[in-house]
Length: 161
Image 1 (tube, rainbow, N blue to C red):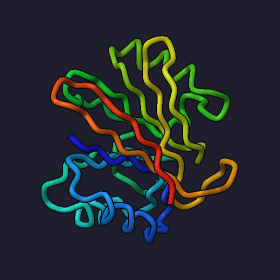
Image 2: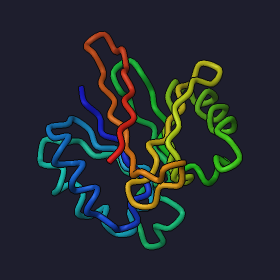
Image 3: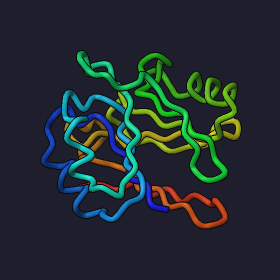
Image 4: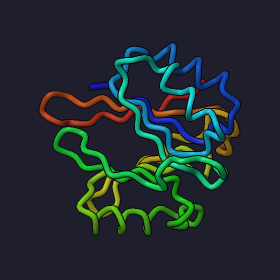
Protein backbone atom coordinates (compact mmCIF):
# COMPACT_ATOMS: atom_id res chain seq x y z
CA UNK A 1 0.00 0.00 0.00
CA UNK A 2 1.26 3.48 -0.89
CA UNK A 3 0.16 6.48 1.17
CA UNK A 4 0.89 10.08 0.19
CA UNK A 5 0.90 12.49 3.17
CA UNK A 6 0.80 16.26 2.62
CA UNK A 7 -0.07 19.34 4.66
CA UNK A 8 -0.24 23.11 4.64
CA UNK A 9 -0.74 23.65 0.93
CA UNK A 10 -2.63 26.92 1.59
CA UNK A 11 -4.34 26.86 -1.81
CA UNK A 12 -1.04 27.18 -3.64
CA UNK A 13 -1.77 23.97 -5.49
CA UNK A 14 0.91 23.74 -8.20
CA UNK A 15 3.33 21.78 -5.99
CA UNK A 16 0.52 19.52 -4.76
CA UNK A 17 -0.57 18.72 -8.31
CA UNK A 18 3.05 18.03 -9.27
CA UNK A 19 3.56 15.67 -6.32
CA UNK A 20 0.31 13.83 -7.00
CA UNK A 21 1.31 13.28 -10.64
CA UNK A 22 4.82 12.12 -9.66
CA UNK A 23 3.58 9.73 -6.96
CA UNK A 24 0.60 8.16 -8.77
CA UNK A 25 -0.68 5.56 -8.33
CA UNK A 26 -1.28 5.72 -4.59
CA UNK A 27 -3.85 3.99 -2.45
CA UNK A 28 -4.48 6.79 0.06
CA UNK A 29 -3.89 10.53 0.06
CA UNK A 30 -3.80 12.13 3.51
CA UNK A 31 -4.00 15.93 3.80
CA UNK A 32 -3.34 17.23 7.31
CA UNK A 33 -5.02 20.61 6.98
CA UNK A 34 -4.79 24.13 5.64
CA UNK A 35 -5.91 23.28 2.12
CA UNK A 36 -7.98 26.49 2.26
CA UNK A 37 -10.74 25.45 -0.13
CA UNK A 38 -8.76 23.13 -2.39
CA UNK A 39 -10.02 20.10 -0.44
CA UNK A 40 -12.95 19.88 -2.86
CA UNK A 41 -10.64 19.50 -5.88
CA UNK A 42 -7.93 17.23 -4.42
CA UNK A 43 -9.93 13.99 -4.89
CA UNK A 44 -10.21 14.72 -8.62
CA UNK A 45 -6.46 15.32 -8.88
CA UNK A 46 -5.70 12.10 -6.94
CA UNK A 47 -7.90 9.96 -9.16
CA UNK A 48 -10.91 7.71 -8.69
CA UNK A 49 -9.09 4.78 -7.11
CA UNK A 50 -7.44 6.80 -4.34
CA UNK A 51 -8.97 6.88 -0.87
CA UNK A 52 -8.97 10.33 0.73
CA UNK A 53 -8.45 11.27 4.39
CA UNK A 54 -8.39 15.02 5.06
CA UNK A 55 -8.68 17.09 8.22
CA UNK A 56 -9.33 20.77 8.81
CA UNK A 57 -6.48 23.12 9.67
CA UNK A 58 -6.47 26.39 11.58
CA UNK A 59 -6.81 28.37 8.31
CA UNK A 60 -9.66 26.28 6.88
CA UNK A 61 -12.32 28.73 8.07
CA UNK A 62 -15.22 27.55 5.90
CA UNK A 63 -14.26 23.89 5.62
CA UNK A 64 -16.65 21.05 6.38
CA UNK A 65 -13.77 18.68 7.04
CA UNK A 66 -13.47 16.95 10.40
CA UNK A 67 -11.13 18.47 12.99
CA UNK A 68 -9.39 15.09 13.32
CA UNK A 69 -9.79 11.52 12.16
CA UNK A 70 -8.75 8.09 13.32
CA UNK A 71 -8.11 5.62 10.51
CA UNK A 72 -6.95 2.03 10.26
CA UNK A 73 -3.88 1.36 8.13
CA UNK A 74 -3.58 -2.42 8.11
CA UNK A 75 -2.72 -3.44 11.66
CA UNK A 76 -2.04 0.18 12.64
CA UNK A 77 -4.37 2.86 13.94
CA UNK A 78 -3.50 6.47 13.04
CA UNK A 79 -4.65 9.77 14.51
CA UNK A 80 -4.78 12.53 11.88
CA UNK A 81 -4.89 16.13 13.04
CA UNK A 82 -3.58 19.51 12.01
CA UNK A 83 -1.94 19.68 15.42
CA UNK A 84 -2.68 23.20 16.63
CA UNK A 85 -5.01 21.91 19.38
CA UNK A 86 -2.12 19.84 20.79
CA UNK A 87 0.53 22.55 20.98
CA UNK A 88 2.74 20.91 18.35
CA UNK A 89 4.61 24.18 17.82
CA UNK A 90 6.12 23.56 21.27
CA UNK A 91 6.72 19.85 20.58
CA UNK A 92 4.84 16.67 19.64
CA UNK A 93 4.74 15.06 23.12
CA UNK A 94 1.14 16.10 23.83
CA UNK A 95 0.03 14.64 20.52
CA UNK A 96 1.88 11.40 21.28
CA UNK A 97 0.07 11.18 24.64
CA UNK A 98 -3.31 11.76 22.96
CA UNK A 99 -2.65 9.17 20.27
CA UNK A 100 -1.58 6.58 22.84
CA UNK A 101 -4.68 7.28 24.99
CA UNK A 102 -6.84 6.52 21.92
CA UNK A 103 -5.03 3.30 21.08
CA UNK A 104 -3.26 4.78 18.07
CA UNK A 105 0.32 3.80 17.28
CA UNK A 106 0.74 6.52 14.63
CA UNK A 107 -0.03 10.24 14.82
CA UNK A 108 0.21 12.60 11.85
CA UNK A 109 0.10 16.37 12.05
CA UNK A 110 0.91 19.55 10.11
CA UNK A 111 0.74 23.17 11.27
CA UNK A 112 4.46 23.78 11.93
CA UNK A 113 5.45 23.59 8.23
CA UNK A 114 8.49 21.56 9.36
CA UNK A 115 9.08 17.90 8.48
CA UNK A 116 9.29 15.60 11.51
CA UNK A 117 9.55 11.86 12.06
CA UNK A 118 10.24 10.18 15.39
CA UNK A 119 8.93 7.52 17.73
CA UNK A 120 7.80 8.74 21.15
CA UNK A 121 6.82 6.15 23.75
CA UNK A 122 5.79 3.64 21.08
CA UNK A 123 3.91 6.12 18.87
CA UNK A 124 5.31 7.05 15.47
CA UNK A 125 4.85 10.80 15.09
CA UNK A 126 5.17 12.43 11.68
CA UNK A 127 4.75 15.74 9.96
CA UNK A 128 5.27 15.90 6.17
CA UNK A 129 6.13 19.61 6.29
CA UNK A 130 4.57 22.10 3.88
CA UNK A 131 4.36 22.00 0.10
CA UNK A 132 3.76 25.76 -0.05
CA UNK A 133 5.47 27.58 2.82
CA UNK A 134 8.26 25.40 4.25
CA UNK A 135 9.90 26.70 7.42
CA UNK A 136 12.74 24.24 7.99
CA UNK A 137 16.36 25.02 7.15
CA UNK A 138 16.71 25.20 3.36
CA UNK A 139 12.98 25.97 2.94
CA UNK A 140 12.36 23.11 0.48
CA UNK A 141 8.74 22.08 -0.02
CA UNK A 142 8.22 18.63 1.47
CA UNK A 143 5.85 15.69 1.77
CA UNK A 144 5.99 12.09 2.92
CA UNK A 145 5.35 8.74 1.28
CA UNK A 146 4.51 5.79 3.49
CA UNK A 147 4.75 2.29 2.10
CA UNK A 148 3.10 -0.55 3.99
CA UNK A 149 4.15 -4.12 3.25
CA UNK A 150 1.69 -7.03 3.35
CA UNK A 151 2.77 -7.82 6.92
CA UNK A 152 1.96 -4.24 8.04
CA UNK A 153 5.56 -3.01 8.18
CA UNK A 154 5.65 0.73 7.49
CA UNK A 155 8.45 2.53 5.66
CA UNK A 156 8.46 6.32 5.97
CA UNK A 157 10.15 8.33 3.21
CA UNK A 158 10.48 12.11 3.64
CA UNK A 159 10.68 13.71 0.21
CA UNK A 160 11.51 17.21 -0.98
CA UNK A 161 10.87 19.15 -4.20
